[in-house]
Length: 338
Image 1: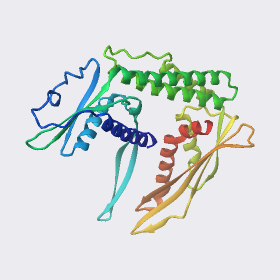
Image 2: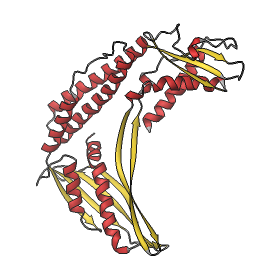
Image 3: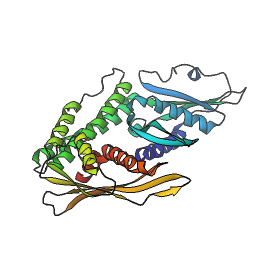
Image 4: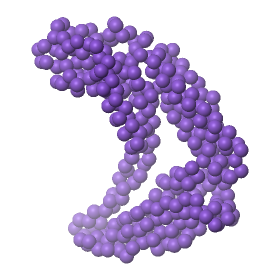
């Protein structure tokens, strides 16, 4: 969401800049060639271009810049997670359960570094229906230099993170550094794909690090981190098995010593509304230092399930806790380490 907000802010700035830079004069003469074909004055080998049209001049400019940004859709990194919504319905005294998959996508936009320098180069109005047209252009060399500068920064930060982890004696901090390096190089890979679009030779700038190797280093660090699990409170049942399963899935090997991962599931009394039973609970995890003297990190999630039968509530709450831990345990521990 923060990245999306940043994109909107940058896009607004680009709009203001584009309007200020536009030197084109509105015309109602014959349709210019750029409305339907590649503009001769902005050849493809030197510029990226896109057009937009609307009944309003400012909206036409906005659409042209938006269409220009869409050229870079290949660089949008979309992390999708699949979750299941369990819905129950009761009809004629018979309860049916429906499992519906929902894809939740987290989209990080990197367009700010790519379309800096974009401008509205030409405008035109069609005299017959008064439609406005706008041409947005972006100099390939200028955009490529912007991206290369950002890639250099990411490489420098990656090198720093890798140097840090090599000198670490603390397993948790080492994992944090490796995770940071992975994220930085994933961002760089996204920029590399975009640079290939801008670079007419399609080469871009190859990376110094191999993402697969970085990912394997992180996996090895996770497996070697000593981590023991325990349950402080369990009002529903089965939390110990759920915690161990989520910990293993996150890539950790459970041991008898080391850092302590403590979980609790505190449930309220079930309530009844319109012949339905509802159960609310709070799932909590704590990461405690090896010495057991300090809490490194803490996280909690509110959970809620429902059923037409009170006896089904515990099983559904267990499934909800299992889903939540498997989705967020690794991310939470990495957050604790940062």
